[in-house]
Image (tube, rainbow, N blue to C red; front, side):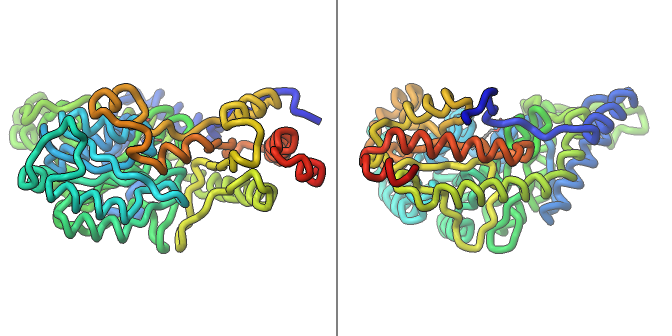
Amino acid sequence: MPRQTLLPFAVPEIGEDELREIEKVILSGWITTGPKTREFEAEFARSLGVQCAVAVNSCTAAMHLALEAAGVKAGDFVITTPYTFAATAEVIRYFDAYPIFVDVDPSYLNIDICALESAIEQLVTGRGLPESVVFDARTVRSRLKAVIPVHIAGNPCDLDAVAGIAEKHGLALIEDAAHAYPGTYKGRSIGSPINLSKGWASCFSFYATKTITTGEGGMVVTDDAEWADRMRMMSLHGISKDAWKRYSADGAWYYEVIAPGFKYNMTDIAAAMGLAQLRRAEQMKQRRIEIARQYNDALRNHIAFQIPSVPPEAEPAWHLYMLRLHLDELSIGRDEFVQELKKRNIGVSVHFIPLHLHPYYRELYGYRPEDFPVASREFLREISLPIYSRMTEQDVQDVIAAVLDTAHRHARRKLYAAAGN
Ligand SMILES: *Cc1c(COP(=O)(O)O)cnc(C)c1O
């Protein structure tokens, strides 16, 4: 029997614990950045085994601060993939720097290591730039500053390979780990330290739909105390705390503006919620792993589907369940498939419209879909199924039933449709 009420695509798990923590903060009279934010930073850092954590009001802010700490300036180049959310590349544009897109691998949809190597090879020999960007090889070499790999869906990218390339070419490594808490790669948490001469940071999101949430929020972690100090200062107007410490005998009112910073600080209300969410993080992940297992078991042997692959030696955070359709086995396209699921009261989504297909980047660089063929092609056949800890057993079964029913009714091969019933 089809579902009677809409199953939302994402619902956070928030309960008494969060309410109690938030209530304490509100009643304490100190609601903006303060002791709870420091406590959240410490707990978050401890959970990853990293030295420094700076809590901010979004992952976008976290990535902006990390690039700033890495010394990115106007006219620099920063490498990332087009298969991501707007935030990953917009933070590069904040500096009037150039995002260099590198296509993803078709299995995991993370940055393609071979494509990354050849893109850098091309860049440092003065080729491989969009036509609108004209620079000689030397300029490019000196301006190539950082790489931002994305752990898409919570699937770790090949960090050892990316770090090796970053070190070889003198790049800072800024992880877009918006989907990746709490995930592991080769037995280590995503966000555990990576030692690189040009620096490293990992950026997390606590947006409402992410694996843990503070409504809006983010965290940047690093093991470089100088980077952490810089990011903390820049997250709050570029005001130096050290300055007022020197004058603290005269009172805490004194401060010095060292740089034109930003207004990115996290509130204690958000941090209180984050602390409660941290305590649930592992249990929520276990539930998502179980849901992914059920989807995999139900869809694995169906000719119309490609289930998500997990990289070797990785335990993904399963922020998203990115199903891919074999469109030649279906008489409908991805968009109609989404409509069919909506009709069956299943909320689904699509991740992501590749950045090079958006008007801004198209117009800026003259990109065409075929410039990043894997991203363009995989986007057309991707559907994200709901995967969150508040889903009941019935919810999971309803999703599976709706997905299978849609595939059977719109199978290209009628023989198969009959056999599948
Ligand atoms: C959600 C998301 C972000 C941005 O996170 P905010 O906390 O909303 O700023 C960055 N990158 C990716 C891949 C995301 O999905």
